[in-house]
Image 1: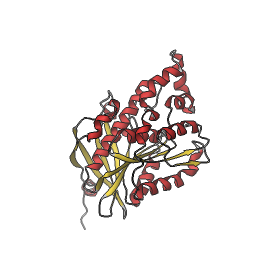
Image 2 (image 1 turned 135 degrees about the horizontal axis):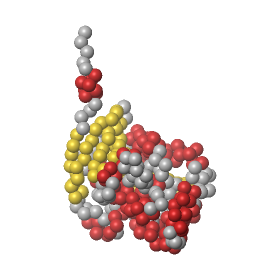
Image 3 (image 1 turned 135 degrees about the vertical axis):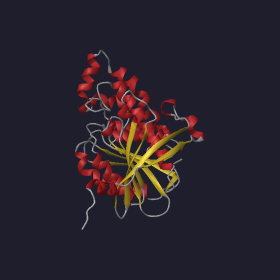
Image 4 (image 1 turned 30 degrees about the vertical axis):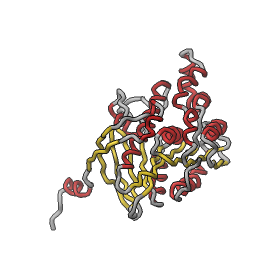
Amino acid sequence: MYSLPITLLLCLAAPAETKGTVTFTPTPQESDVPALFRMEAATFDFTQQELRTNAHYTVSAVRFPSPIVTPDVENNTVHAEYFRPNRPGKHSAVVVLHILGADFALSRYYAARLADRGVAAMFVKLPYYGERRPAGGQKRFLSNDIGRSVESMRQGVLDVRRAAAWLASRPEIDSQRLGVTGISLGGIVSSLAAANDPTLNRAAFLLAGGDLHEVLWAMPEGARYRKAWTDAGKTKEDLRALVAPFDPVTYAPRLKSKRVLMMAGNVDEVIPPASTRSLWEAAGRPPITWFDCGHYSAAGYLLPAIREAVDFFANEPSEPRK
């Protein structure tokens, strides 16, 4: 009996990486998109490699350049995982974003449940997360460099827009049924992306809200950043002025014509209920589910919340809200 060398076996086992090109062509509505989040016509390359498959879906790793070039080379490549339903036909598609704590397993679970129901899902890692964090560096999406943090918010939104363009280019995707969803930080970025991308016509925001200056000022994780801010002689009003161009409430009225679902905790200590209500009011009071929990205790409610969100995306919508 003959055996193949282990290196040859590994090569045979690993699916080849494929390469492609996507052309982003702005819709006529692009001229109405605020300048911070507007995208010009562009062509970008991508690579894709199959990771695993089962009876319901196939997962592949996808990489493409961010529309924003930062001084950190690693951060300039977007890393994503595409969950493609194996059933035939055209599918709706959703970009899935993760929490501040980078629980990628939760996002993968969410994407997998969408794919189980025939909804293609693309889990995208936000700036400075995972492979996008410079080796040995201390840079984070949220840090005491608030200016860079809000720029990371802008980059995250534009990365979602490019991910949506990638999805729309796929032959198995119905480009008229694109959405975005996320939890906590992912929900905040999702709300900005949904409001500022004309092609995203459905969205679900979990544990998210507006009035970012209030959130950043009060959130427990932000204590050291707040101290650095005040030690530099800056005030809460200075923070409000800095983050206003990146606040979901600023753009929420643009969500009124879209299909939106919100879910929140009624005693949330990180995204206060008042912040969620502010976003909800500005967005035209879309359907909202309140859970009897805080931000951290929401862990016990995430499975039913994800089920509700999956139903929202999987069930064919009625006409968009007027």
